[in-house]
Amino acid sequence: MSRRWPLTNLLLAAVACALQDGAQTPTPTLDNIPDNDQLVWRPAPGTTWQWQLSALPIDQSVDAAVFDIDLFDNDAKVVAALREKDRKVICYVSVGSWEDWRPDADQFPPEVIGNDYEGWPGEKWLDIRRIDLLAPLMRARLDECKAKGFDAVEPDNMDGYTNDTGFPLTYQDQLRYNVWLAEEAHARGLSIGLKNVPAQAADLAAHFDWALTEDCFAEGWCDQMAPFIESGKAVFAAEYTDTGITLDDLCPQAEAMQFSAIIKDRELDARRQICP
Image 1 (cartoon, helix red, strand yellow):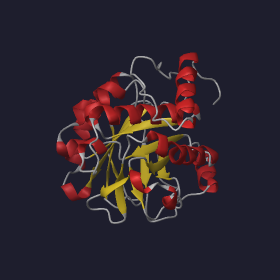
Image 2 (image 1 turned 90 degrees about the vertical axis):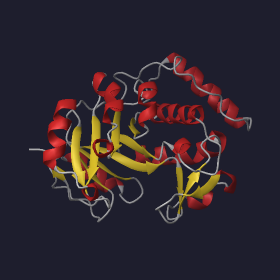
Image 3 (image 1 turned 30 degrees about the vertical axis):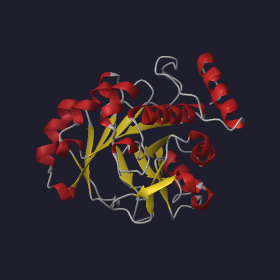
Image 4 (image 1 turned 60 degrees about the vertical axis):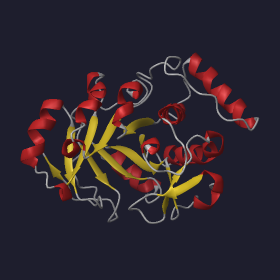
């Protein structure tokens, strides 16, 4: 989408100049970027969804308004087929970690690759302070998301500052990077969700179009995502079978909070449990 707010254009121009000069991207502030109302797709609370990142091909028979699938593992034909069924389609991509199996893995500078991501072999944390080095890579991923026809992007690992990344990341470092990602997505006409990172939900709800949570009911932090519901934006909540949570536990709470809740296996195949 080419129409942008004038102030946002100024911010993006400043970012581009800084990157061309080899400087680190200037810090966006939370009060100088306008809300993106009416510019991109913004799902309402209660929107139904499916999340499938493994066991391909995608099961397109699932009755859901939204499909969240992997950017690299699915081609434009899959996206087009889902959209022909009047589904919105979200591309999953990690923005905070390096994954050795991705086709662009060898393009990441060594200085931005940090500690191992515990529990995920072949994955390491990124130094998200270095937007100057990460920008070409993340922009290319967003461009691919747009080119394949996706409606939105699910950016994973947006909470590096709370983890042992090998870098001294701060709350402000993470906030700056997350705002930058939102602006880059919106500049391409892509909707973008805030993935987990509940501590930043209040600061970022105006800049993101929906949210996605994992285990927020099992872990007791769903209430921190309330700014999204209050703004008329969906919260897609995934709970996992290995926590022992059941639909009887989940559904009354999810309905009361207007969350779009499902129960999935950790491997995120096509199977899901939904509230009646």
